Image (cartoon, rainbow, N blue to C red; front, side, top):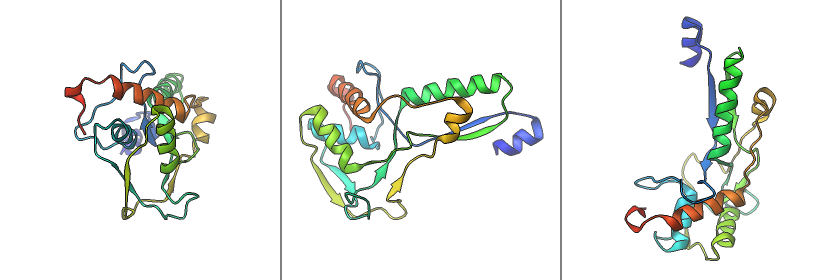
Length: 179
C-alpha cells in the first residue's frame, strides 16, 4: 500500500520491519504493560518473580542447537534511533525504503531463560508445549541494508535488555502486575 501511494501521490516512506522489540529504560522507570501480556521477555520475568504462572515454551526439539526457537531481540531504544535516522534520511531527500531492524543474531529461548535467570538470580519456571503450527524454528533479521542506508547499528545487548525489563517488572506496583 505504501508503494502504491508513493507512486500515485509522490509520498516517500521508510517501512521499518521490527523483529522482537523488547526492553525497558535501564532505570526501570519506563517500560511496557500489555493486558493480557503476550511478549516473551515480560512473561518469563513475571514467571521468575512469581507474579505469573510458569512460562509456556513452545517446542523443545526444533532442530536448533538446543531445540528451542531462535529469535532476534532488539531493544526499543535501538528501534527509536533507527526511526530518527530514517526521518533524517527522508528529510535529506532519500528515496523510499523498506528495512529490517534487528541485531542479526539469534538467541534461543533456552539462552534467553538463562539470561533472565542470571539477571534475576531466580529460576524461570517453565513447561514445554508442542511447537505452534507455522512458527519457524529460527527467525532473525538481515539488517545489512539498515546499516548501509541509515548508518544504523543496534547498541543494546540481550543482557541489558533483560536487566532493564527486570528492573521495570520489579518496580511495577502490584495493581499493575497483570499477566
